[in-house]
Length: 304
Image (cartoon, rainbow, N blue to C red; front, top):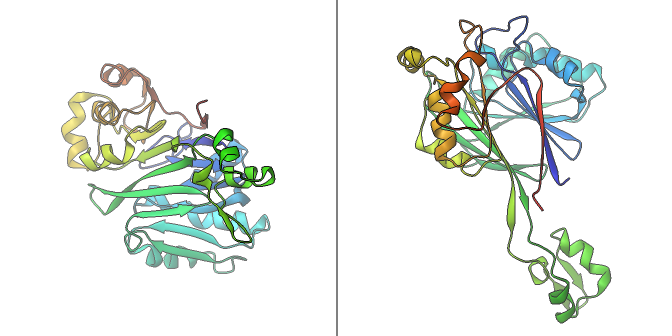
């Protein structure tokens, strides 16, 4: 579990196109997956991606526009048909339960429970399968959230300190994993054998929004920042802004300000037929910007 697998399932906005699925992100850690958004082509992309749909325990929803939620009932039915019985957890803004109740009308007989969580009630921070998730309200035409997912990393194991503290060898492994050991009168803590925490792995995700200082703060030092570029052409900036969206330059500026390692642009307007044509507007500001494509994958690993 020392890495995160990431797949950008699609890169389009508004409606799925034959060669451009709707924007959705799948993050896998230790055999379990988190899905961000689920438009109507997401299921097809998931099949092509090849990762098990049955392993999706959590779904993070950015907002309640159709191109981000209409794929949910179909995906739930497929998961049920594949034998899933464990609950599926959904996370999002207030009103999520009402959306789910509406979508459930077409799939009332699911073999598992769909449990909704209001992230506002959790102070916009929660933990899933050992990953830390932060939600950040962003500016769009409807309430919308950006998300970051972090895999924390404990400090380096210090054998000399473990010996100096006379900690029995058979406890070293558990302490290294962050467990506290009680042995009679002795209590051994992970911090007795670990150095300072090291930089973990972090993914940030922001679509359907205007740029903001809050997004930059949330995305700070990410290994990967997935952000929308509705248009690449700077002349379309005003049109994008009026709709609560951003252009490549704006996403690239946030990537630069947040000191991220890599930027994937996504959520293209159907009116922009060639996303690559405008990439230079992004790379001029942030050199490691890339145009997201269907099924674009990466494996993030801890740096040595």
